[in-house]
Length: 70
Image 1 (tube, rainbow, N blue to C red):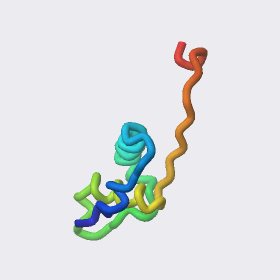
Image 2 (cartoon, rainbow, N blue to C red):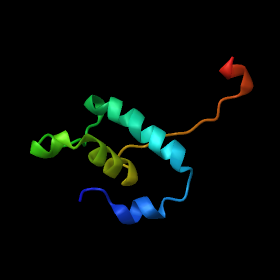
Image 3 (cartoon, rainbow, N blue to C red):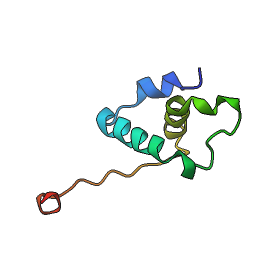
Image 4 (tube, helix red, strand yellow):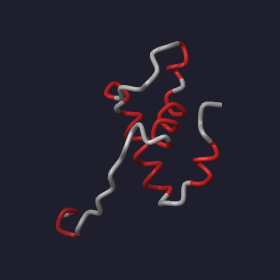
């Protein structure tokens, strides 16, 4: 299994934000330098999860203000 389950289970921040950031990364796999190019590249979500958990892909969460939402 390529997902580091120990890191995933220990992740103690907001899991919704983590999941949302990971799925946004899936949409941008062409821009990820460490994304594999071998035969396992079809396993997109597990690879991106691994990269995010190992902090090879970083995400920054900024909270929207009420003015930005409108």
